[in-house]
Length: 138
Image (cartoon, rainbow, N blue to C red):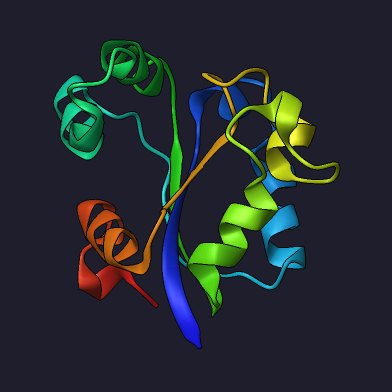
């Protein structure tokens, strides 16, 4: 089933110049980019986006990290986009990620792990809407 998901290429990846390599990796895996932009999240935006983690001990560090540099949110489309992106990204901790996954190739640590991906079709819809008005999805 064709579906959409959201990914965010995180500040560590933009800082190291890995955006193009990650986008190429995603396209090789059959994802079609339906919306993309480069931006710098404000603290308010980052707090709102990661609200689900507000009670977790890493929340403030996550917000600080996600506002530390430019990010590349992208809406992606393909068959089983949500589950397949999670497979292509690899484990949250790059040290535990499978060989050839984005996090194994480009992540530094569990905190600086290169890329975000939606965890469910329901969250994907919410996350895509957070970054892209419906008119920007092509």
